Image (cartoon, one colour):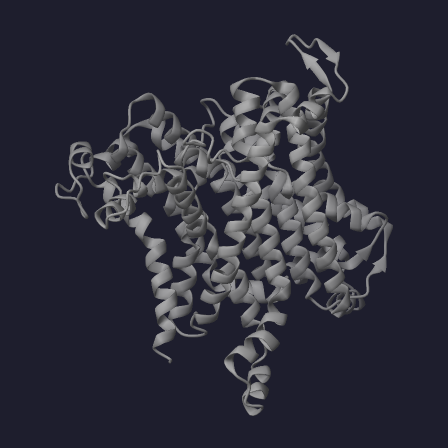
Length: 288
Length: 266
């Protein structure tokens, strides 16, 4: 759409700007404050320069939780995106099946995150949980509170359960926006199912898939409540992702300086990845 | 082939329903049954857990608190985002692209980063432990999202609509409320759905900003779990009840979800 230049449009944006700035800039400045200073309470601060940043960048604890975070995010993207597309492709296109699928599939999205964690905890407990009990009955030695591999398996399965539907909803909406004429043309040309998918459906879904990947990346990178309730970051530190580690440092040990420095580094990583994505997305939009 | 298509969504839905069923199953059991036996359905069906939640005020006020701030947040977010999204979709102005990305960055900020500063900030302006504090803090991620979604919907409405209205002698605000907003109801529905959803499910900020008066149900649950031993049945009942508001919201927007997405960013 061709937009007209109108500086007065700023007046429309002011409420949003004020509300978000109120929430974002003032608290962010507090974090910056802590990141460069040492405090012993009572509003006494001493300048520390970049000491906390150096400490965090060199700390093995940070490297480990960052590594776990990236591994987790890649695994869940790798499972959820193809799975979501696959389910969206097989969903009914009309009739009573549509609202039934949509309503049932959206359910996990609207459950508070700590309830998701608690629910999966109960579901996966080796003695009284359905999943844990069944796996053990089948002969697997499964115990997510003690074995690292099982803890990861459960956390990933929980995230797949929780968020795949978002990818399904977005992909489904993308598929629905394809005109029937495209399919008719493909049928006349005798295109295979695979050709229809790669030549028509996938390009048409590009935009929604970018949104889906962006949202899933951001949210899985900030994941806190669900693994915290499910595993508490354990066994040991095996599932202590970045946010869990950060909260432990800030509120548990009250190491405000290093925690603030870590916050800024953390935020910067998310920002960088999302900026790359956003720029690519906008470029695609301009092309089309 | 036609029949086989039902297999994948069915299996997926069964997978989604299993943990929910297990939670419901637990909520109707007595504590002794949960601890001592493994049963696929309740042997001694009991409603005691639910009775406790509906009669004990620490439990049911938690629900009211949550609903109160979620509704407040949804209204604030959508009301503020409507004119802003209109500006982004119709006009070019100084710094518009940067502003849009800056807004989005706030959706990307991990709440864990903000938990402590939020606590200090809202305490210093005397809003700690109020519904307003939680509603305002959730604006941090809901307003950017609302602007993002609404902007998509508004861009899909042709500009000729605005121009025709002005030619017909409509003032801007009359056009905006009488013509424009009714045209994008589907978009507003979807936006409200997402604002409700993200505010309802968020716990970290809600928990940090409240103590007693505005404590959300989710926080009541975690605190109960840690203080009064592990009353699984009660916890399961409380958890099951948190699913209901979401289910009601989904039911109302079910027709918008598919249609709405197709009109918007897609």
